[in-house]
Image 1 (cartoon, rainbow, N blue to C red):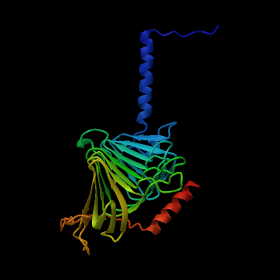
Image 2 (image 1 turned 30 degrees about the vertical axis):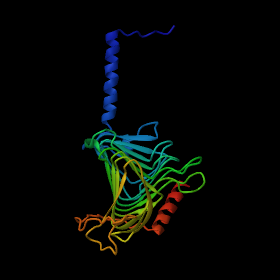
Image 3 (image 1 turned 180 degrees about the horizontal axis):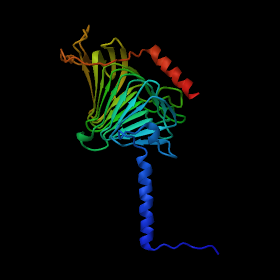
Length: 303
């Protein structure tokens, strides 16, 4: 009969302590001399969702398939060459509670009906708002097999703010092969400031939120048309709900044939001029042709 090892309560406690120390020592291997994580080291074993919650700066510049990133109190940068197709039932990137997202290039696509990128506060105070600066690349809602397509970019929560200087934002394709997902959706006292970009799919702005367009624009009903300061054209439908608002702001670098205004009204709403100069960084001018190229690259990567 094999011998049976019996531990006293004190011995069991000692063994548990050793196990905890072992786990701690293994975790410490994940940290380099600068207390910095890399994406490969941060990957969660046996999981399609990588959790980044270390307060560091992480950069994606490679290809991930059926992989999502959940970011909390951390900065995530998506560079050119980074391609991300979301895990099942997840957005490609979800940022919550004091997180920052910088996108200079790359492609993010959501899973079926889910948004591609979500930017959240996660709390009920402006102090924990999240922020995003997007200069290029493509954010594409998931394609649905039995419903409407997923939204491209979802911004939500008190004080949460996104600045868009370029890039392609495309709502997901629905079951009838129509583009039914939203390109931008803003809710619950968040804001999106748009200086350029290509938007395929309607936008929606909800409770206490605002979408602000900078350039020469006219609004008739829910349709906004015009031109950004870099020459990129805009023609998009923006639906407002629950006191959501749309603002059209002229910029000092651009001379408009007609001031931004909202129709039909008895007196057009004239945007204030001049406004402070805007730093656009290295904006990517995304035309419909470049949008097609980005789609072709995405489809080639998924094949």
